[in-house]
Length: 367
Image 1: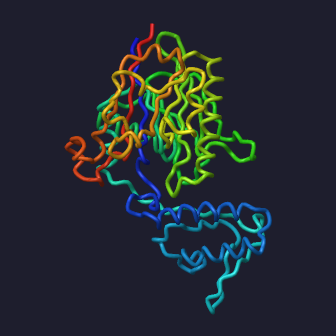
Image 2: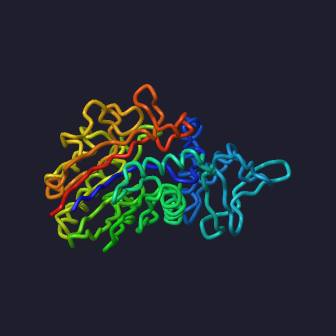
Image 3: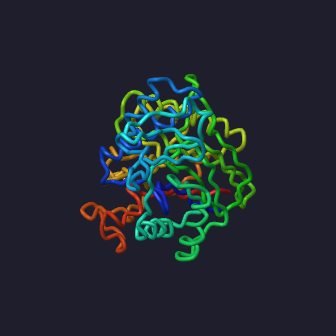
């Protein structure tokens, strides 16, 4: 039997944080950083004087304490019970809550609807490749994945999948990893709470294990992941995070060999194959489909213009799975780079991009 497996960073299907738009630049990254810091502070049982001062400093950028906060603010306060901020008639902002027990709420990033042409082209890329199993990166949640599967892939392109699964992960922005499959899922396991030696959660999203039951009776373990991004800087902390993620992801993949010798770890790993951060992934005979003779050598990258420095999306195989690999390739035509390749006729500008990433696929043959 033959099986086509693919991975694709879809950059969200219907909505996306406004701060993450390509044209937001430094302002957008600042908002992403602020939102993360705000939620860290408000999660404390007791707010120190320094915490309160920091909440007030950041408030000046987004005006959370205003009677009618600006609807276009990149970071927004969602308050359910109690009060965090207080603002006097003179306009002086103070923190009313002394800790987490005094109020209920959180900070969230403003979202924007995805351009329909981009969503359509995301479906077109998938339909063109027509994989049996698709690792889905940067998807909002499972209901959204189901909606895209039913209303776009099935209704428009006639390539819907009977099985769709996604476990909400650690990213509060609605950026998760999931799977679409034409074959039944025989087991699901999350690693959303795995913690490193520092006590922090290892994975930015999750590192789920999906056991796919193949028609020949064999099982295939598919492990999607999305490592720490370089967006906003690639400092030592970010590098250490990716190294920890690669180390733990490889441990999970190696342990999955107890379920089946056929194991595939894939997704957007946000670093190049020769990086120190991804080195643990190549232990114990695991390898990427890039090693196959059919993989595009002139333009091996999977992001942007596809140069070697943009090789950041992977289909990493166990030794037994590698023996079954017959052919691999990259579908780039959903990304608008007309000087590098001819895009789909429905991709007429950057706003029509299915994604900045390219879909990576591989064909396997099993006895």
